[in-house]
Image 1 (cartoon, helix red, strand yellow):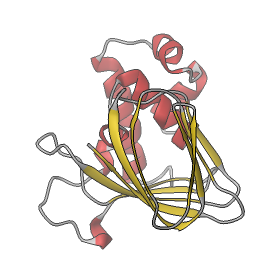
Image 2: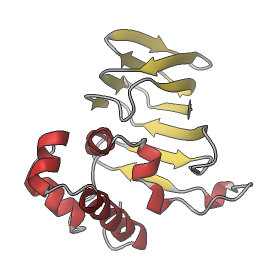
Image 3: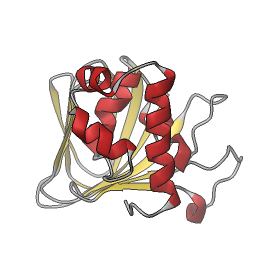
Length: 185
């Protein structure tokens, strides 16, 4: 993510506000999330962009879906969101791109996200943001190994995996990238 962009500053400010609203110190958030205090400070000051795994840890520590953590990047809730207007977040280190197909809204339960992970990558989330959160993942292209709650799933294009996440998960690609849509309710 470009650290000079207004979206980057909005995310940094939002994360700092979430922590302050919950009355947490950087040290307390570090203990709850497993992200170092120094890294949290650099993220909140807009010096670095959080990785996908770091965002996953913060979502879990705040007990928020990832979409709500990224809410400042999302437009207001319109009934139609053109592709050109869908917000995109990327983790350059992991080659991970996340496009919000449907913007989050407190009035709606379902959100849809299109993701792509570069070849030979592994993204690990130690715990879910919301235990028991329902996921429906459809692999569009490539191959993906998804481990959810200790169960391995080898996905090929067209496969749909439905699960309620209660523990750790990981997304791993091999020689090809993986592109998928995930719906969460």
